[in-house]
Length: 93
Image (tube, rainbow, N blue to C red; front, side, top):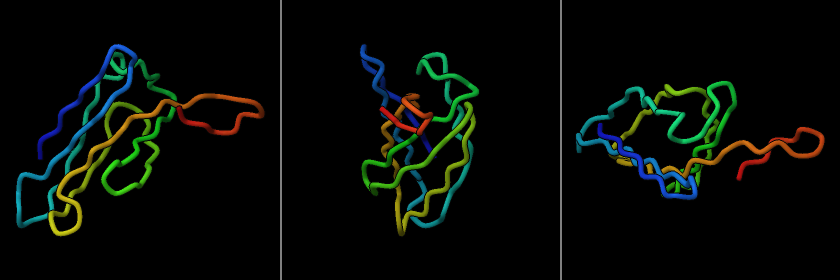
């Protein structure tokens, strides 16, 4: 697997993870530099898969990823910060 991260001046971030093996499922840990992303180690954040429309809540800098080339050979995630609002409902921006 290979992963790369792109951020812009506003802090928006896209994380792309690709399985380079066209035949077998591959898995591993993605290790993000949360300070670059302006994310707090203790706070959850959302990764929104732009290809499959799934959303996952991640916490911390290390997160597990599994890619099966028959179902999803890649993820293109938009990282979304947790925003606290009234009554502490979870909102992501």
